[in-house]
Length: 165
Image 1 (cartoon, one colour):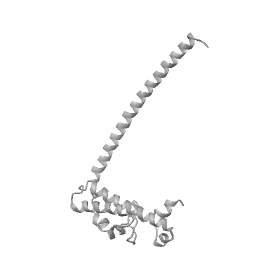
Image 2 (cartoon, rainbow, N blue to C red; image 1 turned 180 degrees about the horizontal axis):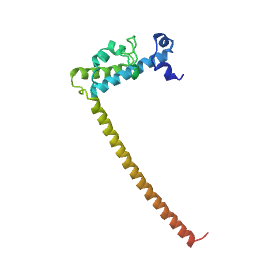
Image 3 (cartoon, rainbow, N blue to C red; image 1 turned 120 degrees about the horizontal axis):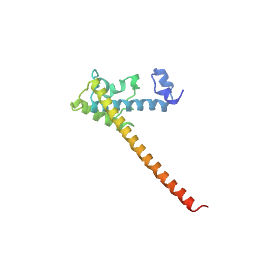
Image 4 (cartoon, rainbow, N blue to C red; image 1 turned 90 degrees about the vertical axis):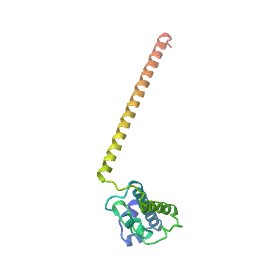
């Protein structure tokens, strides 16, 4: 089993305790990072309908207890990883900012899932159009370069015909 599979998956407490201490720490820190990123995303794009952000990340305790295997968000019980003055103080600062924004009501409003998909489709269509334009530009540059090479080869052939070696 590769390293990631040993720690970044659903596991029992016994399995967790058997992990190398470095992998235990990596699992918790990575999960904390993912949880903070999710809260930041909700603060900027809106909390999905049906989700109460306070139940997920409204406090350090709730942040620790938040468990979602689909998103690889794991729970832990030790308060050291999420202590504001601990090793993840930068992440905890970001968490506080996201939590403040969410609780202030200035966060983005929840959006309908259909609107989100429409936005993604439009974004992909724009990306596709840009790629097609880039491809056309590259094809034109290639055509001009090939034309230049043909002219140079024709000049060389003419020089060789005039001055055979």
